[in-house]
Length: 475
Image (cartoon, rainbow, N blue to C red; front, side, top):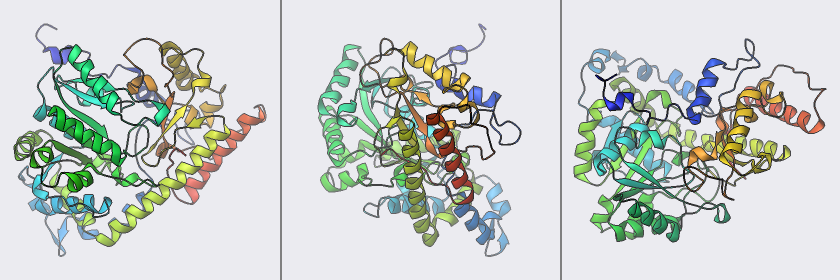
């Protein structure tokens, strides 16, 4: 043990937390419609599987791209050899144009300011290395994606200080909450280097308002901080209000303020909007040349393969395809949202109203024995290990089965220990992961309300399989 590094032997990665334990339980007992109908259905992974048919159709219609050919001739050897880690110019151009298209072409992105990374996880960590020293702090609005405790902190040594947001105003970011978080960091002798937000929010499934974005830019200007806007769900907005990027506000109010523009950085990936997390395509966009140069050097530790870049540059350059894909993806997301929220409401579970993303922030306070972390974890364990609602969830109710994530892992409650405050919302659900059984299951022994939930889940699953795949949001 003594010959290993502290990094190798420490427990700060978070892999042993209950947030990741759900994944482990799924791996031990994965659901299969035929082989393991009583298994666990993975609902804690934000995978957008709704438009695979569109992607597969494009691949079939464009065999040269998938076969690594150009004008009918193989370029396999060209792609197989070492490539500059700046990335393929054709892909960076196509990615920049796709990012603009998602934002209604209101803003443009300079491909030279894009740094390619192996997913958004790598992009966020790289920005931490570029912008902060070990022991410095970033402020994050709550609730936030629990993986940030790993992505932002583990290797960089930076600290996260929560900006406590309240359900009383829809979890909006306020000036008082920003100042409180900043002062909290100072009281702990932490040097605050910036604010990181997800827009649309993971896990709330809501977009940040123009007012909030203006507030954030004013705040970083007054404190001389950085702002990172993680916009990996920007193409999933399926209901008004529409998506407003921080780039929109920069162009409107800070067009000639080069210093503020250099302090704002955008993270993007194709994992959510295009449903390709396995391709590991992420990006940093920054107007600071020093950050771009440093991040590009760091990207050599997590490159995007040349083959991936070639294939996706052809796909994203097909404007007819991208226009139809964006529209259809949002349409299917909205349809799934309505179905899930309706079903949850029939089951007596309320949802936070949202307009984007792949999740549903649900209120399960009425199922808690007490307003404590312990009670919340007890409910979570019942959902994961016992199937909640007696044993119905073990067979047919995936949204009460596993990989629902307790709010305490989203750092929504004030402090790391102690009782949940009145803002606790229970759990959130990744709604595109709803792959329910279609086999017949006996439900005669169940109370009427639970029978209805079972029938609803079957109906949702059946519609997914024979019609199309559409996600849900909170309404």
